[in-house]
Image 1: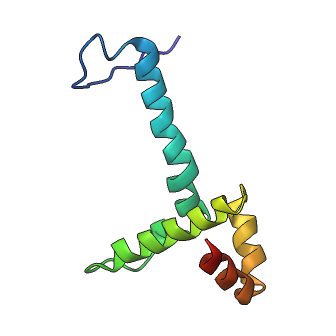
Image 2: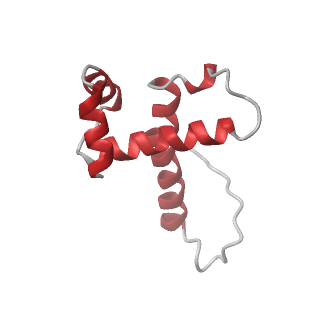
Length: 98
């Protein structure tokens, strides 16, 4: 058995255990689908971009690339990135059509 403690502003009527579990699982789904891909595939943690608005711009561009690849049906972002890196025109076409 695992015990999890949560703090929420929702009332006890709105925050039933099943609802809270769905919220937590949804959060970790985002973590696994976006943040982990950004860290593992795009090696974002070792980025040297740290000043001004550049970190936010790079994060936005990375999120856009991940979203476009997912919209085209790709589930393995690393493989899709390698596939498109072999032919940059294909990546540009993909970005412009979505």
